Length: 229
Image (tube, rainbow, N blue to C red; front, side, top):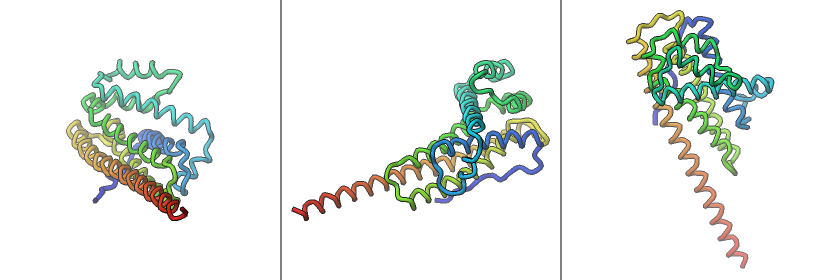
């Protein structure tokens, strides 16, 4: 099965947008890191960061999930809606001011588009899949290493996709009209959806193979017990 990885990073990003992209990218990274998945150098360096910093990124994840939830339900997130999200999350999540202010400068047709919410939801689901796979019982070290390798590739791709999403939904150096943003959003959605389906297939395949191995070990134990009688 072929898999198109990423849409590439957008050149000439404004410093403000770079901060946003790094912030949202760290949201994805922290979910891997806090899962207890410490295999390989891909995530190792993150464990050296301060506990409070990891907690901050986790809180930002909760905020973006809340925002995605509003989008998926079709709520009106204009200036009043954004303020409402800020009020709801005040003291709990601390929704990032730079992200909010950039969203408010882009056409609501873009910032409230259902595909924005779907892209975010698929990204979060893909991270959740690899977190759950890392917790499967009795996986062989080589299997875990393979899962980590695939997960690392998907993480790298997700960071590129986040860069593209930030260009689409926020204001900045690249002046794009509404039609151009919608076209880029369609392309990004297709790319992320393709990866999303691959990750779900990969998860099902790993779980199936793990169950088959358990059955084989159980059958081998039964046969061994019969031979001992």
